[in-house]
Image (cartoon, rainbow, N blue to C red; front, side, top):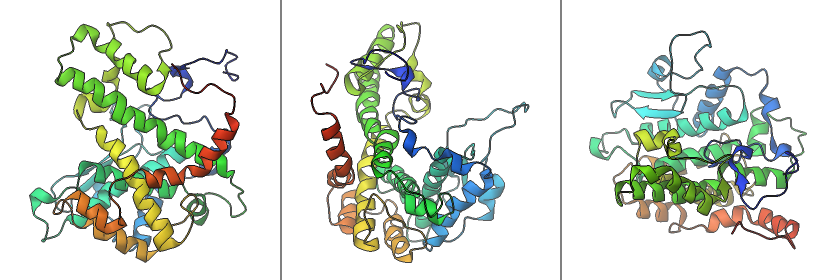
Length: 349
C-alpha cells in the first residue's frame, strides 16, 4: 500500500502481487532478491549447474539425447517459431528418452526451476530399470513427482548452496528473516491456498457440480477472494474466463491438488536430509556433493510406483504425511511475524 500510495486494503489487489494467479507472491521481499548475482551468466550455465547438483549426489549424467532433443532456451524475438514457455519435463518412451521444455534465462527463478525440472528427469531415470514394470514407471503418487522437484528447488535456494556454486559470495550476509519470508511468500504458503483451495474447488464446480458457464468467472473470483484474500484489479464479468489462463485448467485438469501435497511432502524430505544426514539447520543447509543424501534420495526414487506412497514416505522419514516439518521450517519467521503484527487486525473478512 505504501509503495502504490494507497490506503491499506482488507483484500490485496491482484495486480500488486506480480503473479497472474496470485499463487506465488514473488518480488515482495526486496532483501531476498538475488537476481543481480546471475547477471552475466549464460542460460547454459544454469542448466549445467542444475545437472551438476544431481551428479554431485552420485547420480549419472543425463543422456546425450536430453541435450539434443530438449528445448531449453527462449525463442529469439524475431523468430517465427512460437513455443510454450511453461517449464516441464517428459519421459517420452519410459526408457531413456527424457526431454525438457524450458525457456531458461539468467535469474533466480529459472535457476530454481531448472533444478526442479531435472528432479522429474532424475526420478524418471531412477525407476527406469528392469525391476520396475512399464506401467509402474511413475511416481509413488503424482504429488511425489512434484514434491521431489520442489525439494530440489528448495535445496537450490539455500544460501550455503548458492555460495558453493559461486552465485553468492562467501562473505554474503543473508538476512535470515527476509529469506525465510521470501521462501514463504514466493514458493510455499500462498501456493497451498491456491493449489488445494482455489483450483480444486473451482474444478469440482465445473466437472462435478455442473456450474453454468455464465457463472464460471464469478465462481473463480469468489474462491480467489475466500481462500487467498485477493480481489481483481477491476470488475470481471462473465465475458471473461480468467481461470482458463492457467495452463493446467486446459491441459491437465484436476491435477493441482498434487502440488499442495508436494509442498508439504518436500519439507518432510528436506527436514530429514538436513537434520538426520547433513546435521545442519533446515533453513540454511547444503546438499552439494553429499553422496549419502543421493543414496537416500535414490532409494525413494528407484521404487517408482511399485510401493504404496504411504509406505515409501514412512520408511524414508519415519513419519506419515504431516505439516510438522513445514511448520518447524517457518517457526523462526512465525515468531517474527507475531511480534511485527501485534495490534494489527489479521485477515480479510
